[in-house]
Image (tube, rainbow, N blue to C red; front, side, top):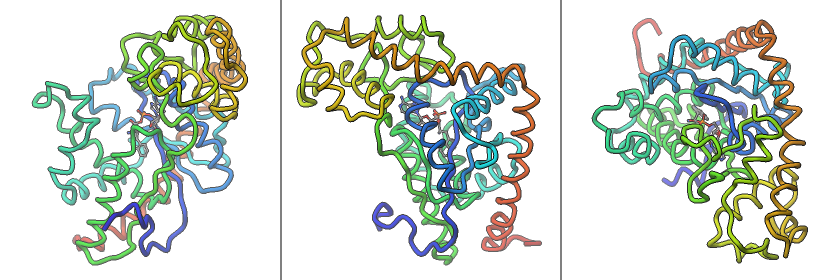
Length: 346
Ligand code: TYM
């Protein structure tokens, strides 16, 4: 069946939100607009778990001297953006054993062919696919385990995660079918819609904004100063034209389209309203206005982020409390999974 037509398929349990970010460097505007702003909204309406996925990070080598502080930095960014530990659970993935245990079970459910189709693996591995870690190949299976160890029903992510979410649904569905337990796992629904789901590089409008782009000018980091933000937008690639008055004219101007989309996402306006405001103006007017808007939105976050980084003890307490709560939710689910699979002692 087409899982997308019926996400919940007999699932009767509570609605729950799960998402995660890798601690592999400072967060950028794409992470913020594609995911983090949604976390902040969802915590008011749903039970939420927001993980720092350090087990995903180590699918490529991470310096052991830096991993813990990188993890703390992402937690600090969640807090600085407005995720409230009184409302949502914030924790490091490696502290909750359910992730790795369920990932193993799911390794035995997922098919090699399914993983071979994952475009993100192909992009990351490139020509080197024989030499990357087994973990990088199995990465999307761990992602499915992250979500389903909590029977999460909704997953706020950027558009680049769409295929991984489809795989999570396929795994949930196959588990339910293989063991004859319809509705045991929900088929998790991606929450991708909305402005900001796909923010592109400032240097190349056909590539997504990414932590791993070698050019720092391709992205706005949450930690950038006002001057850096202004400089990066000034240098952002555009063309010799003007801002047009309708979106159709942006079809083959991806860089301009991206900047209009960023303005819209940051201001809460629709793309068309942004165009109405700037139509006929050159980029010498539009780019500084965009930079001012971005600085207004991001400066309070970077200030709070730095405050949290000056108080690592506070962040560590949030992480430790969150790990305990996450464990308490996942433990009975994992006990049921072991029973369903028929393990000794279950
Ligand atoms: P990661 O760490 O690459 O990115 C974190 C979140 O940011 C979104 N994102 C973007 N959104 C819009 N435009 C962009 N240019 C952009 N770049 C990144 C991502 O879609 C993501 O939502 N595999 C995940 C982490 C993960 C996860 C999970 C997510 C592991 N387990 C379970 C959800 C549920 C990843 O690498 O995200």
